[in-house]
Amino acid sequence: MRTPLEALAGILTHLQTKKVLLCSCHSLPEMALLCEQLGCELCDTRLSTDLEPTKLPAQRFDLAVVANTLEHCDRSAGEKLLGQLRNLHANHLVIVYQRRPNSEWQAAHFYALGLHLKQTFENNEAGEPLELYTYDIESYNHKREWNTARFWANPENFGKYWW
Image (cartoon, rainbow, N blue to C red; front, side, top):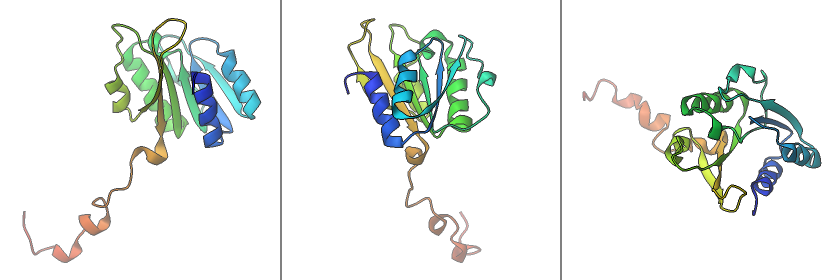
């Protein structure tokens, strides 16, 4: 993918998205056009730089997109917004973040929220890299062999061993 919009189109198509929540501080008409072309219902939510999450619609979406937002806000407010989107509003998240010098957000902060760096775009108007992070609830916590009742309960050992 050469542009973030092409990457978003690929994600929307892959997930067969029907309802998209867009959270942005500025208007993104390209996203509205993309959703129209792909037959997705778009809920465009404008946020101020305080990222007040109570302004979000009280419903679930197939995908939440946060773009042109985290660059303009405090990191703790951004973490609260991403956590609320991830936990209450959508099973899939896409974050488009423009890396800036002396940025409050580092890759580790996105990883701590369960996001994965999907792609970096070097050529943009500002000359700074755009990073596309994704979150998918289905692949977030993969199944582990040791994390099963077979290894945790062990009722046959109750009363036999003392640790």
